Length: 537
Image (cartoon, rainbow, N blue to C red; front, side, top):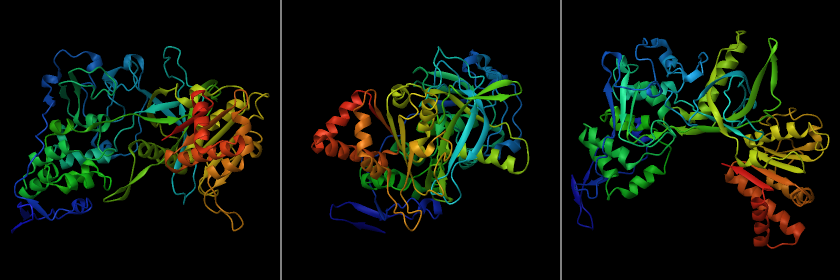
C-alpha cells in the first residue's frame, strides 16, 4: 500500500524480516521510498579466490605460501574446538610448509616485519579475579625462552607484547555456514590474489599479491568479523546478492540518501557482527572473495608486561626458562543471541586460560597451549620513561595496574630506590577484583594504597583512585617536583583517566597556588619533559 508525504515522495510499506537477528538491529523502517537516490555503487571486487591445480601454485616463493598444499586436511573434530591446543612451530625460516593455519597465523601475516609471529607456550595461567567480579581478569606466564633475537631489541619493563589473536573458531565455522561454503572446500588450498594494499599481511608492502592459503585461514587470522560497525559498502554487497526482494529493498535503503539518518542510527547503535547481519538477511549469500574486500584487517592486540622481564628465570630440568607475564581483562559486548560476546583478543585468552585451568582441575598434565605473539611496543611511553632512580608514583585502575608490578619489582632490587615508589590502585571490590594482592614484593602495605569504588564494609565508604590522588596531594607534589620524579597513570581513559587528570590539576592548584588553566599547563609541561606519563585506552 503506497502513501504520499509532504515532500511528494511515494512510500511503500516493506515487510520486515521475521527473525531475532533482524529484530535485534532495532531498525526503525516503517515505510521506504519507492524511488531511492544516491544509492552507493557496488564496490569493486579486488580480491579473488582461485583453485590451485594439481597441488601447485604459479611461481610462488616459500614466503608467500601459507600452507603445504600437499598436506592432508585436518581432522574434522578439530574444526569446532574454541580453545587452541597446538604443538610448537620450528621458528627457523618460519618453515611455512609445517604451519597448521588453524592454530597459528599464516607466514604472510607479519605484524612485526621482517620477523614472523612466534608460537609461545603458556607456562601457566590462573584467574586473578574471583567469581562475582564485574570483569574477569586472568594472569598468564608465557615461555619466551626460544624467542629469536631482533637486532638487540629486548623485552622491557613497562613494554607491551603484540598478540595475533584469531577469530573464535565456532564463529568462523558459522560464517562459512551462513555463506553456504561447502565443508569439503573450507580447508582446501586456494590461490588468494589481491590487486594491491597491505591486506592480508598487516604491515607488509602495499602491492598486489598471490598467496596460497585456505578459506578458513583467511577468516580465522586475516579479517575481523566482529569488532567494527557495518559500513555502507558492506551493506551494498549484501544488497547485491540478496534474493529476497524485501531484504534487498531494506539494504538498498540503508545505502541511499533517503536512508542516511537510519543508517547513522544503525551504525552507532547496538554492536553488530558480520554473522548477525547474515542471520538478519538470510537470503544474501555473497561470494567470499567479494565479501573479503570490505572486511576489516585483523589487527594485533597489545598487552603490557606485568613483571620485570629481565628477572624472569624459572628453573626447569637443569636449565632456565625465560617467562614474561601479562594480565588480560575480558572485554564483553552485548550479543543478539548469547547475552554477551567476548572481544577477539581477550576472548582468545580466556579460552586458553579455561583450557589450562580445566586440565589442572581434572588432575591432568598442563596442555601445550600457545600464544601467537611478537615483540611489540618496547618503546611505548611506560617503557621509554621508566628510570632506575628518582621517586615514582604509579596510578592505575583495573588491569591498568599490571605494568606497575614490573616497575615495583625492578625498583625493589635497588636498596637506594626501595622507599621511592608508591602505588595507588583503584578497584571495584576489595573482595573480588584486587589484582596481584600480596604479589608486589616486600613492604607491600607501605608502598601500595588500594582504593575501592564500592563499599566493602559498612564502615568504609567507596571512593575512586582520583579521590586518593587528591588525598595524597603532598606526596604527589613532592614527587613531581623532585629530581627525576615521575608520575605514571595507566588504565581506561573514560572515567579513570579523565578523573585522575582533573585530580592532578586540583593538586597543582592547591599546592602550587595555580589557576585551573595554569595547572593544566603545568602538567602538560611535565608530560613534555617525560615526568608525567599517561597510557590510557
